[in-house]
Image (cartoon, rainbow, N blue to C red):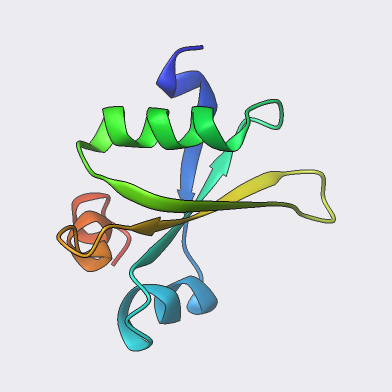
Length: 88
């Protein structure tokens, strides 16, 4: 699968803002293709944004959308990638 078919868009809300900035957890949230698995999501994001991901958690929202909560490696600050994606 093409990485751009797997990752639909980044998600931004107040809760995601806390994951990025306030708590220092170094996490970002993306809406992803419902048929993709964690390994495909990790490979796609690493290829698209030239980052290293240590962990991927997924969830299905009540609206039927799939979201991936990714933890970035310490040498890749989530706030820098969020700024690159124009989330602020």
